[in-house]
Image 1 (tube, one colour):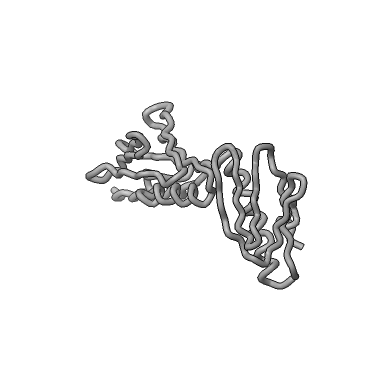
Image 2 (cartoon, rainbow, N blue to C red):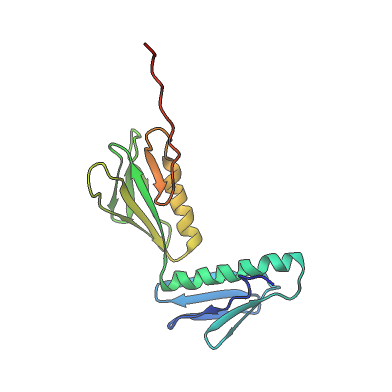
Length: 187
C-alpha cells in the first residue's frame, strides 16, 4: 500500500470539494478555486470533512497513480487555504527588481529591463535589502503550486547564478557551488 496514498486529507473549515463521476475535482476556499481532472480509475471519496483516495487494484499503473492523486489533492487544499510561495534572491551589482502595478521589472545586466506580467492568480512581491551588499528577496505567490513553481523557474532562467561571483537569480534555499577564478601569473 502506498504510504502517501493511504493518508486521509482533512479539510479545514470553509473548504468545499465537489467530485464529479469523471473525477473532475473542484476545490473552493477563501483564496480562490482550483479545478483538476484526475485519472478515472482512482476512487476519490469525501466523508465528514475527510478526503480519501483508493485504488481499484494493485497493478503498476494504479500503484503509481495512488500517491500522485493524493498529493495533488492535498496541494489543491493547501493552495486555496494558505497559498503557495517560492522565494528567490537577486545577487549582483546593479541587479534590481521593482513592481510597476502588477508587472515585475527586472534589471539583470542586460542592455534593457526585463518586464514580466504575472499569470492569473499569481502575485509578485519584492522585498527590501538589509544592506547594499545583501541579495534582494523576490517572492512568487499563488494558489496553484505548479504555476507558482513554473513562474519562479521562468524568472530564475532569465539569469541563472554563475559559479564565480554568484551573480544572478537563485532560489532562496539553493546553494551555489563556487569556483576559484584565474590563478594568476606566477612570478
